[in-house]
Amino acid sequence: MTTPAPADPSGGNLRRAAAAAVAGACLGVLTLGATGCRPGYVARVGVQHLRFMARARPIAELIGEETDPIRVRRLELVLAVREFAAVSGLDVGGSYEKVSDTSGLSTAYVVTAAHRGRLEPYVWSYPVVGRIPYRGYFERESAEQFGATLDEKGYDVYIVEAGAYSTLGWFDDPLPSGVLDYDDVALVDLVLHELVHRTVYLPGNISFNETLASAVAGRLTIRFFEERGASEEATTAGERRERWLAQSRAMDKLAAELDVYFTSVEGREADAILAGRREIYERALPSMAELGLVPAEPDARLIDRLNNAVFLALWRYRKQAHVIDAYVGSCADAGSALSSLPAVVGEADDPYAALLATQRAQVCCSETPAVSFVGRTRRRDPPCETGTTNSST
Image 1 (cartoon, rainbow, N blue to C red):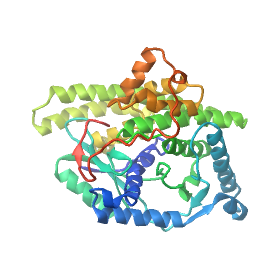
Image 2 (image 1 turned 45 degrees about the horizontal axis):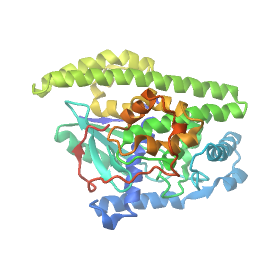
Image 3 (image 1 turned 180 degrees about the horizontal axis):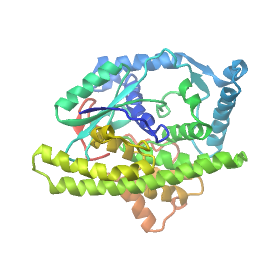
């Protein structure tokens, strides 16, 4: 069943995650001749990205022309966050010093899919970003057609609208104008989150990258507002971080329950498996609503739309958050946490396990050799368009 995007109560996380597919395809333009990607698809996405880049204007110019005081404040906030991020050890480069007017541009839609009988995403490989469980489109109809194809093949499908994204330092990314409508805390968190991706990125480990960026951005957002004397915003940022950790604990627990269930019913008829899965999701709905993972008053239609693709999309920003957050907290600052990370996780297939081993050995990140920006380890990935399921979420 193809599932359209429900309201995203997570502060834009689903949109942000989904945009990784758009970034991957845009980066494919750089390396088209060396990959197995389909040229037509990559070129179409690349053209839209170039249009987006062409509309970018320096924030300093926009501040001088803008008459809305709220918008002026948020533009100034973006510049302040960039300065703060730089002194906090993030690789800022030229990113987010411009804003691109996205009015009239095609909205990005992203298709994500998963196996119906286990928590296993359908993945694609892209240049630079590696294997990720997203494929982006700039036409809703194209996204829905592709989603329908996957649905016919027996996969859960979820379609979501994408927001801001990072090209991991290959371009100086402008900020989409639409995010200036976010509240101050969400805007600061968004910029910091994307700058973490620019600073360090492990290809093929989408959940780890997203949870890491959420952990670092969450801590830095609190500190940013504290240093500005904005106690109300700092408190809000702290509350959102605590809720994120609580969401992670709940989703880790639910994932474990689903894994046990899927193992126990392996080989049974699909309808029976889906009926049992529905019962598990239905039991989890009240706590998910309480934690802000789904609308506060979920209706009967929501349980029909909740599937493994939706669950994995939510979980990717929260998977084992306590493990990553504890690592970040053991470091003197964000810069040392990120620069030490490649040495800590190395080429481990399971970076979560590598971090846990470090913590059990009571080794803090300051005791590991720092690696110059960036730990964007280029791991070998299969050609684009492999379209396989993968246990990495």
